Length: 98
Image (cartoon, rainbow, N blue to C red):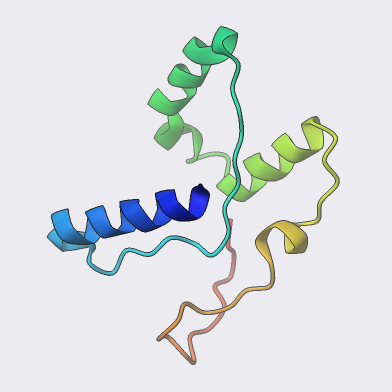
């Protein structure tokens, strides 16, 4: 299902949004469920996500979420070793991927 969603959404982005022709999904993906009782809280989080990620990186947040739910994982397991995007051979690793 996730592969289908990524494929269809990529096609739509490339067909409809001229300024995002270089868009590409990351290699992996994750899925989370949310109970109906938490819907308002999730909507609030989404509404202020840009502000939130100015102080907490996606990487920090995901690792905290996994830990909070008792899922043992290392950053390398979740994010893998750094590899430059295809077609950018010779690119240097950024100082921080946070």
